[in-house]
Structure formats: C-alpha cells, structure tokens
Length: 526
Ligand SMILES: *[C@@H]1O[C@H](CO)[C@@H](O)[C@H](O)[C@H]1NC(C)=O
Ligand SMILES: *[C@@H]1O[C@H](CO)[C@@H](O)[C@H](O)[C@H]1NC(C)=O
Ligand SMILES: *[C@@H]1O[C@H](CO)[C@@H](O)[C@H](O)[C@H]1NC(C)=O
Ligand SMILES: *[C@@H]1O[C@H](CO)[C@@H](O)[C@H](O)[C@H]1NC(C)=O
Ligand SMILES: *[C@@H]1O[C@H](CO)[C@@H](O)[C@H](O)[C@H]1NC(C)=O
Ligand SMILES: *[C@@H]1O[C@H](CO)[C@@H](O)[C@H](O)[C@H]1NC(C)=O
Image (cartoon, rainbow, N blue to C red):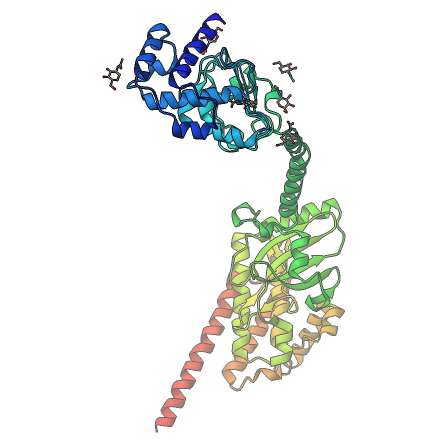
C-alpha cells in the first residue's frame, strides 16, 4: 500500500506540475484549454527515474501530450468516482448508474493506456453501455474488481484477455447480452469466477434455455425418434412402394399397397368374384397395371405357407405365354397374388364373341403349347390350368396361361389330357359353359359319340373351313384331341409330338395362305 500511495503522489506531483486550476472546469474544457508546462518532460523523466513501474515510463517514444491529457482525465475521474481524498489516493473508478459520464470517460482511449496503478476496482455497472466489451478497461491490469453488470454489451468475450489480470478476484458481467463463447479455454475462466458473475449475461447457458434443451433432449427428441421409427416402420410394413427401389423387397406387396392400387378394393375395380377368388384390376404407384387375385378360401398357417412357397416359384416364371406374376401379399388376413395386367380377354369369350377362323385357333393353340413346353422343361413342379375361361388372350392373340398351382401330382399325362379338352373346346366351339360345368368327361363322351356319327358336323361351323384341305386339318386336329383325352390305353401322345403336329398344321396353313395369295395375284394379272 505504501508503494501505491507513493505512486499516486508521483502522479499527483505530475498533476500539480501541470496546473493549479485543474479542478476548475469540466473535463472536456480542461482537455481543450490546458497545456503541458515547459518543464513537463523533465518532471516525467524524474518520475520515471524514481518509479520506473509507472505505466507511461514504459512507452517509447513518450507522447507527452497524451500523458498530460491522461493526467487531467485521471484527476477528474478520481473526483467523479467519489474517492474521498483525491490528493492522496485514487483506489476506485466508480461510475455506477451514470451512463453519460461513464460513456465519456470510456471514450478517452489515451487515459486507459496510462491507467494509474493505484486503481484497484472499476465499477461501470447499470450504464446501458452498448457495443462490444470495453476492452480499454483491461489496460488497468492491476485491478482486483471489475463490474460491468446491467449494461447492453454484446458479442463474444475472449477470456484470454483476462489472463493478464492476475489479481482480479471479483468480476461481474451479469445482465448483458454477450454471445456464448465457443473458445475452448472458457472452462478455466468459469472455474475462476463462479456463475454469479455471469447471471443472464449470455455467456453461461441460460437455465431456462438449458431446461428447454433438456426437455427437448429428454422428451421431444425421443418422441421424434419414435415418430420417425414409427413412420419408417409404417413405410416398410405398409407402403414399401414409397421407399427407394433398392430398399424394397422384391415381389412383396402389402394390403395397404393393394388397397391403394384398387382404390380401396372398390366395386368398379372388381373384375370378377368367383368361388374363393376375388379378382381386381389396379394400378401400382409406379403406374404398372395389375390384376390382383385375392383368395378367400381359408387362410390357415398351412395354406399360407404353401402359398408363400408357390409365390416364390411363380414370380420366377418367365415366358411370353405365361402371365407375369409380380409378387404376392400374405398375412393373417389376406392372401393375394399380383399379376401384370394384360389387355384382352379370356379365350372362351374370344371364341364365343368373334368366331375366330381356323388359322387363328391354330396360332393360339401353338402359343399355349409353347408355354406348356417351357413349364415342362423348366418348372416341372408347376401345375397349371388350361380351361378356356382361365386362359387369357392378348390383343395380338398371344395366349397367356394364367393360373398356376404347385402341383403335388403334376403328371404330364394329366396335362396332355387338359390340353386335349382345351383343344376340343377350340375346335368344337361348343364351349357352352353349362355343358362344361356339368362335367368334363361327359362333355368329351358327348363329343366322341357325335364324332363317330359325323365328324364334320361336330367341327364348328363358324370356322369357315372353306376348303377341303382345311377340313382335313381340322380332322387331324380332332384326332389329336381324341388321342390326348384318351388316358385309358397309354395312347396319349407326348407333348413334343403334339407340339410338332400343331406346328405342322400351322405352317401348312401358312403355306396355303401364301399359295392362295400367289394364286390370286396370278389371276388378277391375267
Ligand atoms: C468533485 O466531485 C464532487 C461530487 O462528487 C463535485 O461536487 C465537485 O464539484 C467536484 N470537484 C471538482 C473540482 O470537479
Ligand atoms: C525535453 O524537451 C526538450 C525539447 O522540447 C528536449 O530538448 C529535452 O531533451 C527533453 N528532455 C528530456 C529529459 O526528455
Ligand atoms: C440503474 O440506473 C437507473 C438510472 O439510470 C436507476 O434508476 C436504477 O435504480 C439503477 N439500478 C440499480 C440496480 O442500481
Ligand atoms: C497483484 O498484486 C500483487 C501484490 O498485491 C502485486 O505485487 C502484483 O504486481 C499485482 N499484479 C498485477 C498484475 O498488478
Ligand atoms: C460465488 O463466489 C462468491 C465469492 O467470490 C461467493 O460469495 C458466492 O457464494 C459464490 N456463489 C456461488 C453460487 O458459488
Ligand atoms: C453481479 O451483479 C448482479 C446484479 O447487480 C448481482 O445480482 C450479482 O450478485 C453480482 N455478482 C457478483 C459476483 O457480484
């Protein structure tokens, strides 16, 4: 303390040297009117010799005007800070709740540069100071207390600037609007001063904000996660068609997808409702038109497992004469097969509607046989349906086998028989559903008895068999059908034989057509 007052006395000696009228006017007036006396540099030099720790002694070159001015400011500030005896000591700067003069003194940058060593505490609180941290204040490195609370200071505080202030024990930055520091050494700083130095300063995380964050972290975040998981789950289990293609399971459809595709299984999408199966038309999200077959005939675990096995195989079938099975949907309430839709109609409708010529019937039969050959060679375990009401026909007259079953007793003899019945229906055109429904075997028996009476009469009159060769072809075909349906004596031809025969008939037909056209041309030329 002794050195302090000695320092201050030196300081005041400086004052005394400068003017005797120093307290006569306001600080601004004094700064304008007073000038350093001629021996001022000598006084300063003497002071520095006596006490080299004086702040102005370490500056070089010395700015005598600034030093003089700062001594004027110091003497005013000492009195304004209500220090009791400014002639002897200047321990504190107390400008609390005095916004105007606090701002004025802060604006004297030169003063803070030469901050008197005697000052131990600075209080600038409750002054509505604006802008960033008044860094000039920290030139008074010896201070023990600094209060900047209740101002409107903003920006980040670099805590590094406090590291020079070794004796600073009381700091108050409360009630300001600083930004939270992102500097890593802030932790040390906050250990040095406890939280009561930073109340609502913006430097420490606000408790309310902190609580908000905790609430968000503990409640909102888990809820968000749950919602997200739920949403993803919903997507995966209900609407996987909204997922990117790579995340979707191939061939897997969900009831929600089918519901969306069929407009909620609406009446207008229902194509047909027959025993155990509802067939809907629909459009998938990607625009693919599909036929959706929903099976209503039981849904026990056993049936379902069987269905799953079947679907696995059906989705692998790939041939131009087989419908394309896109996938399936199965759960405890539903079993459905999704099939690519083909434009056209069933073969029996085609037969009864358009009375197709012989040539077209051959073409269709050949297509059916190609599908059968593919299945026999590649998928011998797959059984299929050849009834004319289940076979589909595209606009270009490409037949599509559309009903499959994983056959336990898939037997080629049975398939040949089925083809025979189909072939009969194609030739005779006497499809007459009632008759068929009655009994397949009686239908065949009926035809057989009629054939023995008059073959020609049995052959469909609508076929327009204009020429003898065609009639012969139809007879060959009829015989083939007879052989196919004759399971009794092992007379059944094999698939290859049937295929060859139909192909031959078909190509004969083509040759004859060509012949006919040539003939016509020759005639017209003559
Ligand atoms: C010193 O300060 C007091 C108030 O604290 C004031 O009344 C007085 O005029 C001041 N003296 C000078 C010389 O400025
Ligand atoms: C004081 O200033 C005068 C000129 O203004 C200069 O000649 C002299 O050397 C200075 N003395 C000191 C001690 O700096
Ligand atoms: C802050 O200053 C205002 C006047 O500027 C005064 O009315 C108020 O009481 C002061 N508050 C504190 C806490 O000192
Ligand atoms: C801190 O105080 C001690 C003793 O009071 C003093 O020697 C030292 O110079 C002071 N530090 C600063 C940076 O002023
Ligand atoms: C903060 O430190 C001061 C002394 O510097 C002490 O009086 C006060 O109780 C402390 N407050 C807290 C919250 O630790
Ligand atoms: C800082 O100032 C505020 C308001 O004036 C006060 O509540 C708080 O206790 C002070 N903190 C310290 C460490 O003095």
